[in-house]
Image (cartoon, rainbow, N blue to C red; front, side):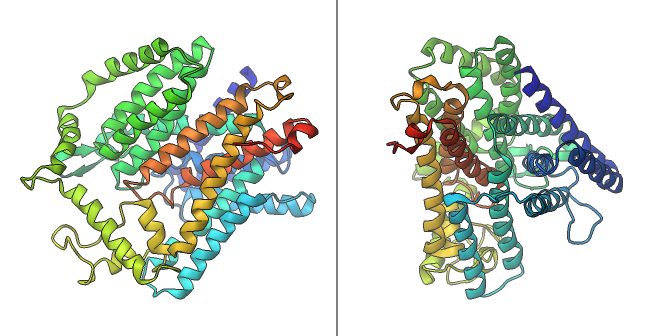
Length: 471
């Protein structure tokens, strides 16, 4: 346990230091990154280089403003640099070391989704955003394949959870301490925290924090280490305060629902009194710091259904954008209208229901967004990929009830399977309020579910592993 914690801390300090160096001196950061990779390769080639690259990519999701731009043609961000190095090293190591490149059924489904994106790109009319968004789809599928090849052990998955929590914490603290530098103004909510991200979108940053909060809260409940519980309480408090500071109602709604789902999943393991005590401590610590504007914004949800026409314009925008996106999808239901084309086609008089609101827009719903961009074919494949992830997680949990499997320690894999189910449910719920099909966390969760099932199959005795598991 201490060795795994030490590795996690050293890894995170290295990632944050590298990111800060990139912010101050990009050229020095590139040299330092190259030197670190060479050093890692001499220690254990080729496994550690792609793995550390993957951790860095996931870690930079809430830290994208650090090293967001590099003075290198094509590879103009630290994330792209780490991805090219990690994936390239993985392929070179596989060729020279005669290592098998893992794809699996989930990988084939992910590649099929990439194929539908390419077909939609070929079939549709092109705008200035079509090719960049297509590349984002392809990059996320490659990230999925990178994850299923570099995550091999329980410790790898534990480190991934730690990377998400710590980097979200760093971004949240940075945004809180430097609001003038890292936040942006937005309408009636005033200053909305965006953390250390490049995205001028507070709800998206709130979505990142949501993942960190759920991981921290889950292990606060299930861990038996007192020091870890003491450490997680302030972490959750900071992340919740930062999420509230985004003034994002969607993330707050999903957080409440996901916490309820967590308590439901753990109802037979965790005493109700203990769970409620943890919630009370966190609430009492954070509530006095929450600005009144947040309460006003949350209570405004109830005004969306009154008859006096006082609807929040952002809520109306989500409804209208989803309606427009679905109407566009119906004009080309099989292949869709192409990746990234919605902001331009949204301007058409044929579809605009809210012309007075904004000149351009995106679809505020993942399901409609996927249908619009890649059609029913791509939507069906992505749905299949999510179903396969859920099936794998249920199979991991069910495998501990198979006769004879009780001799194997159930602790980490069982807990990780439940946690990934919670994260997947949160992702599906948040998809109702925002388009996250191009977010790295979604694809990382789907890939980790596949890895978890593979580890469990390898861990079980052959007789039990070969036996079909209901779930």
